[in-house]
Image (cartoon, rainbow, N blue to C red; front, side):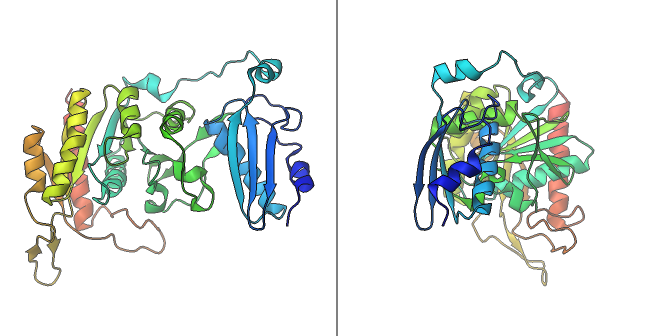
Length: 350
């Protein structure tokens, strides 16, 4: 088992990403607890809750595991202001952030009233379908607690960090950023609302996005802190509301739609997911989750149903692994192509 002395030795050359000074010199290692199966650390850094913190977290965990730590738990706090002032510089980061490009990029939030309705599946396949239409597309997996986009798209690599900027991973022509890239061993996220808001802000401001026509935001279900942060950051975002045909799902989805309307976001339409099951043998449709939820929700929100997507799953391609992305010629893939075309028509006529 790794010792406290070994921990300090491993971290002696690791630098604070903003002050470019070693943690040892900054006296930044505040706590080391060595238990049988867990090494627990508390580090003080200049700017906690940033993308650089996540990069530092990866670096520290990887180094400590290589040195023999079976599992590593990290907590961060902010360095005292006098320490930051002593070691800080007056340099300012350049570069235009994604939020500065509101005139060029259409932001589309994909939301739902409750979990389990296939919101992330819709987000991923809409993004891929827009890219197939020749659009420059990005996706932010803003479902901080339930991040799933990297797995759904079959992404195994991590974003690259150049300087102090994170470069998103690209897959199927879509630029992707997700909290899942920065979590070790699928660990649960236990941050509170304000910290999550900072994380989302970093996804906009500290990621080196290429030019984008569309940015898809896969939001958490409901109307909690993250959804509120997105609404305040993006006053001109457009929204797609995802529901199933079940009356309860449609009822709770109406809350998310009402929130969009109150914050003056434009609702592009409703997507009724899992609308029916169609037998490959007989072609008969079975309405497993009932009928009517999507049209009723659209009527309540004074919008329209853009598509009714049936139950199904993508064909397995061993050469191109992406468990939730439908091929362009798949029956459901064609429905997503139609959705993408409607979204383009609605957003580019303005």
